[in-house]
Image (tube, rainbow, N blue to C red):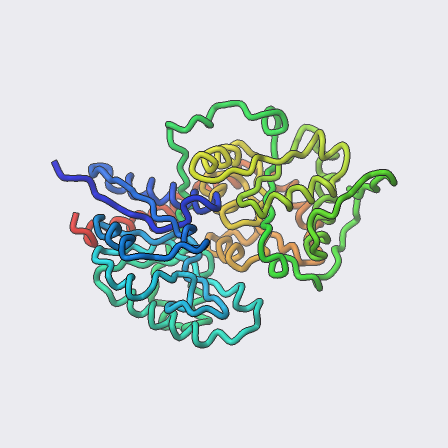
Length: 418
């Protein structure tokens, strides 16, 4: 009997629920691609190094006790302004230590983008040069498999490094599309608390980071009827939860839409779903703006959770919803993979890139368009009406993506000589 295949995964293990979806999905994909082989995964959490912990020889020694290192998925190849990273990106295991890794490496579903770099306006030419050299090295090594994710990364590479590089890379679906809730999880089948169960439900998620990139302060005012507008009573204490004009414009507009839509659909409720701690204030701002009775009887907030147990709870909640209106990447990718109708709030190019690559640009709304709230109201109505058609479409998309992903993951057999 062969010994277990030992894989260590370098990723954000306990931070963002979307990263947990990615990890759950990739491990499920690998295990089901090699069902005859026992596979043991170890965690290597990149978040530890974001808060002062330094990489060490001991880290690399531990890595080298495994058969395969997986990097990702996630936006590891984000091009950063003002960074001394030898790769020019977020991936910054010190070069001397990286070169001491003696086992094969799989970079899976890696995203590359320039949101912070473009927002800063700084010259990132030196970072691009370093990234180009690093990427060329990876693409010519026999002990490395590399695939970017389907979030428009190929187009970022085309803009940044040219056609020759962009046309050469492999692209696979972000593994969050295959997120898996284990049979041992306690959540599936359990009733949710009041407000989260017992009626049709719309889930919402807004990203609470990089607000100036998501909600430019100079974006135009919304053109919509304001049919759901609600005048707060004079004695209503309305705290200023988020001090950002662009976001408050957005949350005021979407609150109008939700009130009108909930009034027209009295059987339905809504739930705000935070993915990281920064999202909690966005949910609080929404509830504050909605006012009574919506924020006490029609709309609630899911708990802020993290880690794999938190992932299982939230993904099970998404699975039970009738529609997910999401801004974060995995508030879209994972529901699509679960077959749940979505409406993407495309404040970042990566989300638009994802819907473009799966052929579903009709499923997004640009929150910075003056017609965004009119479009969102109509899209909500269409989504609930056409739910079965959208679910069928998503099942077909997942099937096609999974076939491509499995062909790529199957190459692990040659990489580690299984």
